[in-house]
Length: 467
Ligand code: S3P
Image (cartoon, rainbow, N blue to C red; front, side, top):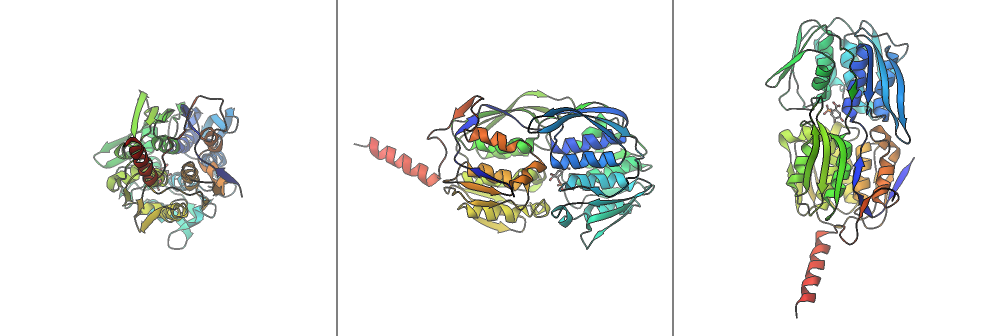
């Protein structure tokens, strides 16, 4: 098992870039693989999750050529020659690794194929509910069999000529929405998904990019059937979910400023900016471009953060950022309440339990609820051994917490970070003073300490001033 040792923050780099967006990378390969012809994907995220999607589409007939590989990161540019919407029957099962997006979106595509497929996952993915996609895809006529009541992996999909449906999402899930839309694209007629709460809309934006006709009417998204995506080169922007780790590190450091270059700014994903603004950070964007997926630079200036409430319709927009926002809450003054976030319990691990366990290990008072938690901010974090539960976002969120802790924080099982962020450890090194080849703002005594400590320092300064 790999581990990372984190010590106190030394400096905040002036600029940083993050690898490609995970959601857009998965979808780009899927649409390109379903198109007849060649698509170049630039800015691709070569994380373990997305590479599972690449291998799956190869097994289903797509041809993939790496065009550019970055040291320590992997294949960031590739050429996909698709097989067309009727895919090749794979010779064996498809391994989705840790990736819920691969398994759920691919299920939508496989539901409309004239063959049977088996999808497997690792121990964590095999515990996650696939019933949420088996239900609508079953309504469309496909047969999806899995383990137990939650229809867990391994799942067996018997594809067929599907029937179009109108489906109201019972949970706010972009993965379920996307599975139904992808199946609908292959079915005859018009398939509609109604989403009572807005979720990330990358499938919709990529349908437009790849020439698939669809329309939105209020909260109903419809796709016309019997369509084949058309090949078209695409550039993937940086992942705001990866940027969020550095945004919080800068936001919690008075005097710091960081620019994160070329990050996706799709409004269904920028909730983390709104939450940090509410907490008192200064966050802006510049050089925005609106072609395809909006993207630009994010600039964060650090200051003193305050607690906030994160809940309601905002949750689906920040669902992947809640672990790092919980760390921001621990570094803030006052109490932060996260509610309506029950979905966190069925992510790569139970993220409510994992965040509560690790914050407590670092000395933070946390109340756990079925749908969220309440975090008492302002205590001095103590270095601790962090249990990641093989969840990449838990590992990275607590690596950032470690930058603010007294003593050493050990992230046990850090190999899971490769799920979404190859190169994270190298980037983290820049905050630990390990790589001084790039401009950075040194953090001296201005690293935020506990509010108590700050108050004591202020009181000491005051008494020193008084005669
Ligand atoms: C994703 C949707 C979200 C998110 C996941 C990626 C996607 O999951 O948590 O990391 O790419 O569609 P849900 O759809 O389960 O909310």
